[in-house]
Amino acid sequence: MIEFSNASYSYTSPLGTVQALCGVNARLRRGEITAVIGHTGSGKSTFMDLAAGLAEPERGSVTLDGFDTASQRKKIGVVFQYPEYQLFADTVRDDIAFGPMNFGIKGSELNERIKYSAEITGLDDSLLSRSPFELSGGQKRMAAAAGVLAMKPEILLLDEPAAGLDPSLREQIFSIMRQLLDSNGNMIIAFVTHSMEDAANYADRLILLDHGCVAAYGTPGEVFAKRELLYSCGLDIPAPLKIADGLRSLGDDIGGAITDDEIFLSVKNMLSSI
Amino acid sequence: MLRDITIGRYVPGNSALHRLDPRTKLLGALVYSAAVLSCSSFISMSAAGAAAAAAALISKIPVSYIIKGLKPLRWFILFTVIINLFCIDGKILWHLGAVHITYEGVSAAALLALRFIFFVLGTSLLTLTTPPIALTDGLARLLRPLKAVKLPADDIAMIISITLRFIPSFADEAERIMKAQKARGADFGSGSMISRVRSIMPVTIPLFISVFRRADELSLAMDARCYGKGVRNPRKKFFFGRTDAYFSLIMIIFCGFLAIIEFFN
Image (cartoon, rainbow over all chains, first blue to last red; front, side, top):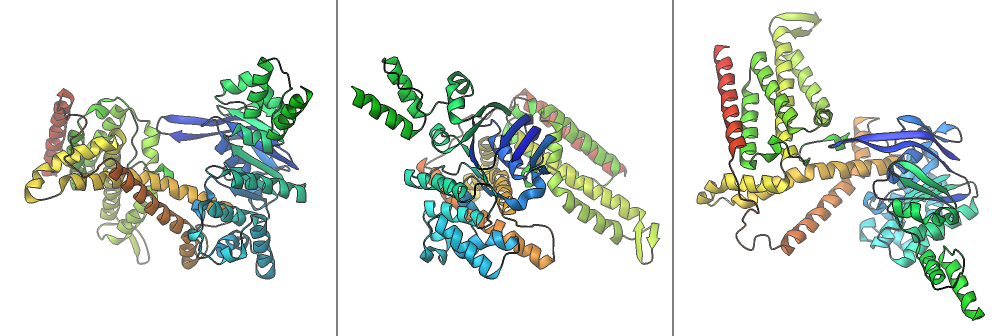
């Protein structure tokens, strides 16, 4: 479990000191996918940096199983925003191998890891020997993600993993996360998103940040029930919930559907009962 | 870190320094740089320092932010200071075998360090208080007489201001890429010289690609707005007002003062 206890962080900008996080208490649990949501500038990216151990809190602590995350970086894989901009090697294979090799993995173990991560991200064998710069935008994103997965991280943090992707790749990214969790229930997975639908459809738990503080924490059902809070944080509710609200105002109460599947079932039941 | 670089960054504000005509500021920064580079005594250098401090205070930009901008230069300054400290002959203050530090060496090293610091402060204050577009227009206006000798003044001004404008952007980008590669276990700044150079490759290649991508996007954006398809007129008319007159007067007095100090030295 990654635990934030009273963690604060600030940085200097031309207009003075910005308090990015102020006394955050939060948990990222094993075996769960957590989504971090919040308005632009609410501290989501700083939250991820601290969780990844790439920055240390000024006050309070961020720990992984009791140790500071900064000392646990080997266990933590981070997929940054637009990770395709970090590709550099001659071939996709070499780029994927960069991370594991930095941690001293060689030979058959290395080959096995490249194969594993290429398979899970759906990268074709023929793509591996190509230059990463010849790939399409979506393939680049997958190649960069494969480079992180090849390190077999226990903890996987993703910053806006689906930004700018088409719907099918979007779906694929999130199903990879679920697949990883299914094969290793010990993993901690967390992603930052601006899309309330992605948070509703793919996360087990939500952390809502507002002005560097945790405004809400809970399952998607619990957090999205607080409509007023979301609006006051400059966010919205997921589309299915809006449909449910709309139907209720017309006199058809179908309950609080949040995911795409739930609203589909609710509407289907409603129509069949007419 | 890299993102502390302040050269080329603009901080919006409404101080007297912000309101100055860009031409006045450009000439002021030029004169100030020349003055700082020709200071040869501690008295004139402290006068130059006082001028920089006064300008920084007037700009109302947080002093900590301006000072942070000097941080990336510390190794460069330290290096030149050390070279000067040990390589100038004169009255020996301290020695250990063949290595010696002289009185002249200490003062030359200190002067050089101050010269760098004030020079960078002066130029950063120019970009910190002037929006890039105003800087371009001011430069173009100042270079206009050179059009008589077929010098593409507008283009030169555009090139200079784009260069300045992109220094902080690429510093940010470099830092982002470094962070990403660090998360993949890359280790910068340890090991032998060769392994250090090799370790920087995962940063330089994506950075260069990003430079070309941005250049491409920028040229497209400029084309889309018909850059170079006619005469460019600045959106704002230049106005040489009272503040500018005061500022020029202060600069002239400052230069005269420095000249007198230097003369009697």
